[in-house]
Image 1 (spheres, rainbow, N blue to C red):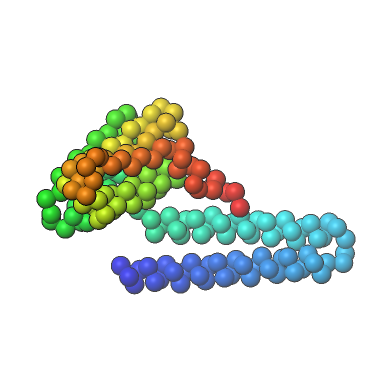
Image 2: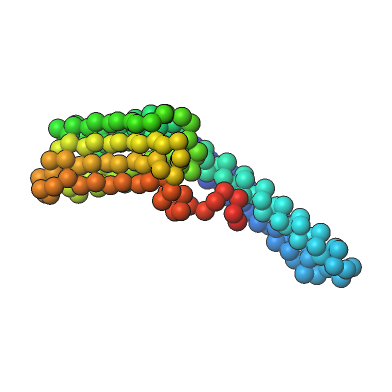
Length: 181
């Protein structure tokens, strides 16, 4: 696994370095161009195309590195597995629930729900010492109303339950729009 990641890192480095070099050459050519505005604009258009292609290629490479949970059930299963690993065989009771239709979700949404859910699970187990963890994913026809909620019950360090909730619209605000370079 480490070797695969190193190979991906080298490949990504080479791809990005090559792309940046090409972009720099186009911009340098535009700055030195003396044959008119049309030629300058052509260099700038080429540089913009190269940026867009480089962004797509980098996004594809990065997507290969992240977990691919394309539906709600996959997110819940992955978060439950993460909680089981963190509890290290302890007496933690983990329950998951899903309301709404489990359809394929956009990558930005699944990635945000998983990453932030992973942090909430980690905080509940490591810092609150919970005995029961509930992970709930509520899907709505309006994606902005979908929510992931972790509830930490029976925490010895806190007498009341602790909730972590993330709504899809909050997750969307935390990430740039695709192609918004």
